[in-house]
Image 1 (cartoon, rainbow, N blue to C red):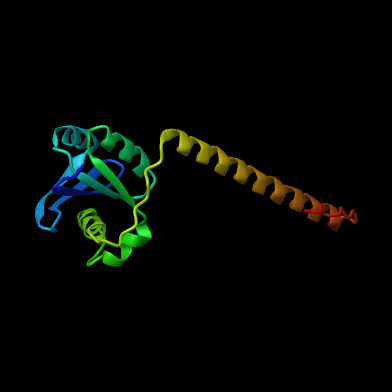
Image 2 (image 1 turned 180 degrees about the vertical axis):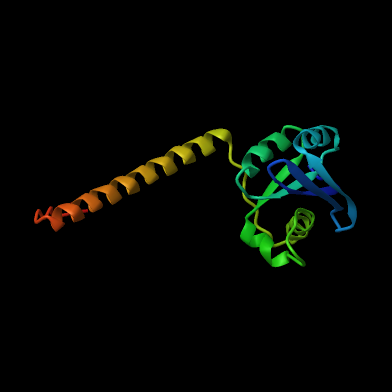
Amino acid sequence: MTTDTMLGIDLAKSVFQVHAASMTGQVKFRKKLSRLQFRKFLAEHPAATVVMEACGSAHYWAREIAKHGHVVKLIAPQYVRPFVKRQINDTADAETIVIAAQRPEMRFITPKMEEQQAKALLFRGRERLVCQRTELVNALRSVLYEFGHPIPGLAS
């Protein structure tokens, strides 16, 4: 599906900044929308390529935006940073995302499905618990050693 508009979205907790440009870079409009207005905007706007920085809620919003027939692309923040022209604010960020996305060499991140995110969450949670357990065991061994009870470490 080809679209003639690219929307750069700067996601925030309550207000989203939208920067729309043609594929050649000509600015079409800039809008600041609440969450409710943003959902309505997505439903009413013709199919477009929507580009966002991959951040905390980007994968959720990518799924929501795709439901409205838009093509969604995510960019890693480190690939957007070199295109920042001025001070950082939501309006400038949305514009910078569009400029970065128009580069032919830009690499995009595939939005994760809900199941993928759930599995990653479980994996990270388990990793955190293993690290905390190791930390506690090492702290306990240290305290016991202070009182003359050396406990050998576990062989890996």
